[in-house]
Image (cartoon, rainbow over all chains, first blue to last red; front, side):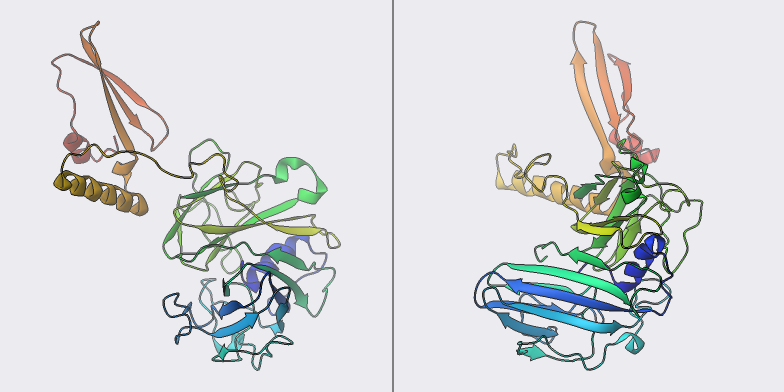
Length: 163
Length: 216
């Protein structure tokens, strides 16, 4: 997923009529739709470092695993992603203060692997799909909604091969 | 290598494009980012501060920035000169795969913002070789191993951005004028260095260039 929520605030700030505060949280929604049956979806959260191993996809580095059928959509959403997301260097995860504790799985989904419910569904997460094509989109807005008229932002993720 | 070219800019004189940013995200560790702001083929120095944690300040910092997987550089009007503009034709070059999103909108507007996923040059099959085809002029497996070794050395030098790998030396023999033409083309500053050498005159060797710390 492209860029984290701090960057969302940075890029939308200049075009907003209001001010997005340094601690404004965001509502982030990541939507995954499968084009065929039996598509496996792995979520690799960035908060604990990228751990997904394509040679051991169900191994200890995998954070979450789901299965989707044709036209089925799972909405991975976090209602209040804490900010800031990173430390002073702008890249290192801030730690537990940035967690989204007790995240629910998407409606209709059963997690095949879920090692923790406490990481946000947010920018910089990696989503790996196996077994068929998927469409992945994301939308972000600051919360509380619209300080002034700060805009929401939708983004579509482009696939890249694993390396 | 992967290259993006910004298709629109703040110089468009349109309210919809008053503020433009390119969100450049690495998908692999040790990805080297370079930027050519006016598309003239020369990669420019830019402000490498992230902007949202550390404000960008002049003078500019470097001509390259190394990103780790997941890290993002926000290319905007403050990247080249604080308070400048980000114009169409800006080239973004990565040593490895980059994910780029373009964000644009009207300053102080009511929801006039958009974000689109960018596609690199050659994504649709033009402007970039899709498959490299060539032959290695070797006669034995030992020669083949040596050529492959040299290719790997050069690729590693490219990754490390070593100056010697940007040099090209072309030699041509001019029989009619009894002179030997040597074209030493240095791509580092994009200015070919053409020199004529008389027959019998000693030409500088690659060793001489290295000893002089010259790229070509």
